[in-house]
Image (cartoon, rainbow, N blue to C red):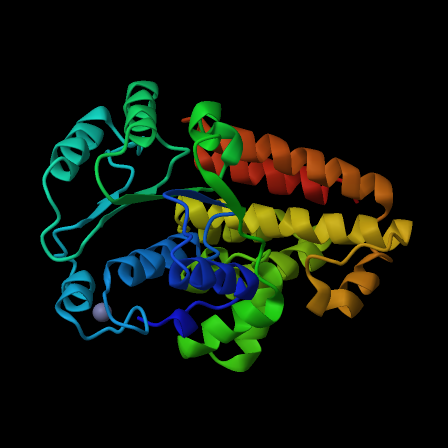
Length: 327
Ligand SMILES: [Zn+2]
């Protein structure tokens, strides 16, 4: 683990390192910004550096760094949301942390606590955290992360120095994907579709998102000429999808329609599927605006019904039938 492993956020990293070296790092920090852009990674790197006593921190070799890498550092505490259905940071986790930090540090001269999900903390636990932030024991640093700053208790926000992590640009996302040995062509498309979140890009990759999108586009091109039999066949294929993939397939359709509306309005907005500009312009000759708006509405109805326990085959067939009948 090195500072260089973090892609993007150069200014933040540089500021943090300067504060670290000049011993001006605030004792409570909150990193906020979209999910999957490197907040937790930066928090961990900073924690490792804080605990290391070498000149060039983190050195990666001293007993403290070694323990940190192994995940056994006695002066480092990581709290993450926990639970089977709704993941939250609970009061028990807070109490355990409070008990742990009341003892003297073992390996370093300080302790570091990361709360990875300060926006996913129930009220009792949040109040306990607030108390710990207000009355810290000994030399201790708190690094909080939150995807959704609005969901963090205002009193906690005001106790921390808030640092905003912006979305990654396409190039940064591509860099990370290529480090993971994803081919350049796919990496570039995934980066385009990621909305600046590396996690979103990887989810797309793992769920065969690009294939799914291709399939959605083929569907969009052909749906007006589907026979009843075609509709049964495509429904069979879609029924084999995981729920997540099915939602994604609908999402891609919606993004195609959205892009076509942008093309109709000649808005100066970047297309979601910017790599498919020409194909989408072709579709403009097949879909008129009225049909597109109706299609979006049908897709939203289908989406909602898929969240209920209604029969999936029925929902999908009806959705496709309504689209075909727009012709
Ligand atoms: Zn070290």
